[in-house]
Image 1 (cartoon, one colour):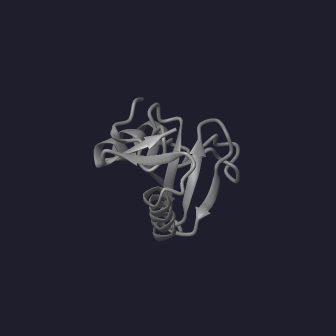
Image 2 (cartoon, one colour):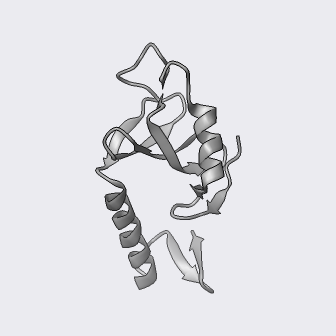
Image 3 (cartoon, rainbow, N blue to C red):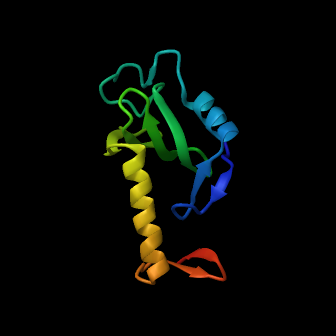
Length: 121
C-alpha cells in the first residue's frame, strides 16, 4: 500500500496524509477483531480506534491519533505500538513548529532550507 501525501514533511521519508490516503491506510490496517493481533488486545500493533495522519511510503509505520483519548502515537507493523508519544495533536503540532523554527534559525543538524525547500542531510 503506497501512501500519497506531502513527501518529506515533517520528517524525512514521511508523508502527511490527505483524506483519501487516510481512508486507504485505515481500511488496510483495520480488522474485524478491533485490534491486531486479536490475541494481544492490551499490546496490539494496530487498533481500529487509531486514525493515521502520517505514514512512510509503504504504510508500515507512522503516526496516529487515538480517538478514545486524543493522544498521538506511533505504529510500526508487527511491533507493539506505544501510544501517548504526544498527549494531544496540539502538542505534536507544537513539536513540529519547534523543529521548523530550529531549521529556520540554522540550528538543525539534519535539515536546512535551500531555495525555499526543506533539504535533509
